[in-house]
Length: 515
Image (tube, rainbow, N blue to C red):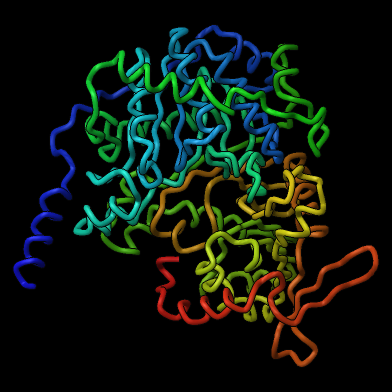
């Protein structure tokens, strides 16, 4: 047994190393050329110091915006994502990136390597086209067919690999950007028949776009970004790789057009209509953007990682609030420090509303356990807590979830004093604080603040449970407000006994820092 164990350890150590010498040619975002997108952005901008925003709360509109930008770009496309699925939404985007490259557009695609398992051929195939570069961020070395296999083969490097790039960013022609909470996959664009995320992101033009482009460059040129060909074994025959890629993206359901309602819940039409007209309908304000340093994934301590965390920037702004704070965080584990800070706000008379997932809605049940440890303390401090119901959000119908699919919260946003807005990739949980890298934007824009609150109210008031103390002040109750009257639950609604028992048994053994 000792010989077997030693042999396995030796094999794992031998295959668990990344290549030490890799050619990473540096490149930078291009200065805005004279393209239609550049001209539209300029024609839409009243003041070069301001940033224009279009909130995109509906998944179909958000996907269509990315596809329209990819199809209209003439100079460059820079994309950075935590996750790109090999499904009809992912393949639709990949097909349009290929088509853009064939038109002469420079395409740079940076993907975190956690969820690429089994999809190496898709990324390697795209990279085989002229004008395209694909890089994997913080990659695994080998055994790439499955996620468990990737971890087992790199078990001696777990600390590094537990840190991931959670950023989401799309920049077209250096002039128009899309950023926020959405990854690329059917469930982020309300195209899944089983479960879909309630999410939001923004299309932006103006002063913030060059800032976002510089953040992309910092990650693209970092030591943690490897060319896909240096990590993925495969054919060096470009014609063969392109043929496989073409068959993947040109045949199948992704050829179906994105189904769009005439207007979204904010009254905006499809972005293509504005692009055709040569001017974007936007709301305007001053904005700053920020992101963790890519080296955060190499941090050797929680303190070192936390020093690079964008969560500190957001909570600093929240703590300056004078009247009210509205927060949407699908994975919410405030910790004792967060409870104290929200309590301080309430002591100053600041109203605090927090929307997160219910136990039934979350796709990370153990994270919900971490949140539930602080639920009573938050209520005791005077925080108003709302938990999204997967059934009620589906029945609401305002966000157009298909069929019988479950709805889950994924929007990461905050509105401070009805004027200052945060939107980005960051959750208020330990992973965003000290494990993953994040990207965010803070805007002084009352119009955008009103739109975000309006969207969150769809989920908070009509599709969630309000959590409160039971009359004895010991237990909790979940209140659903219906037209016929209030419905009160004394246990977490829509959750079976087995799920409750499983989390009760597993929860105490999961360190909070891993949630």
